[in-house]
Length: 310
Image 1 (spheres, rainbow, N blue to C red):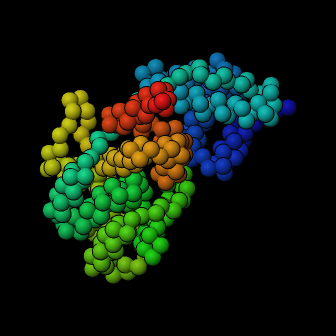
Image 2 (image 1 turned 90 degrees about the vertical axis):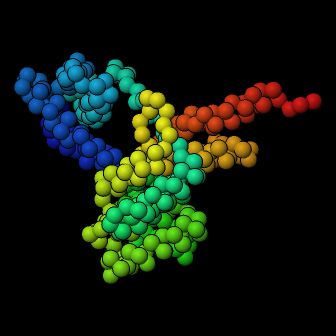
């Protein structure tokens, strides 16, 4: 059976994207890999060629080499299913890579209040209002900053205290919000109406031009606010980010669960859905993100091992 590898690559990517995968770099990676095979007159996929393609850039980070091999590995599975002679199956783990997560900056309630207060002094006033709303929204809900700026007015269901949030891979979820958050967003909308008369539609958060608040501009504004607050940092750690408000929300949620003796696995399952995590392992990571949380986990494990007191 003769396989047209380029046609197979196009079909492979279509099928995977239909299942929800974004595969942002895969068109380019597979095209480059097939160009290399064609240059050598090769019409089959081998483990040797796949690994050689992955490590071709010797100065590339190991994580990027692993990504390159992963793209070819998935494609090889597809081709092998069509014709085993056209592609060898590439074993997993040939190039291993672990991504080191940066330790998040966890804000106290007082620091969040300070950030929002400083944001009110930004200029122009429309940016100040939007940044106050953005900081408060992420702190209160834990949604991603990109998700927050992508919200439209119609995504706020104030009568039901819900937000329709569009997360990674276009997945939508309903996020319950506290009534105080609803009131804060409605108050912001009243200010927004003065800048954009058609306030019943369009972006929820707007910049000084009346268009959707730009995420890059928002992050830059947050850095200015954080610098003005002079928040304490530990040696060797990066300065606080807007995204760390999301981490703070998640950690505080789990701390609250531990303090009240709630089933943490059950709480993590709910939190993973609430935060829009595709992989629940990303939620379990928060158990090690805070010294206080790790202490609580350790104390509960010790109590469990000791068993009930006689």
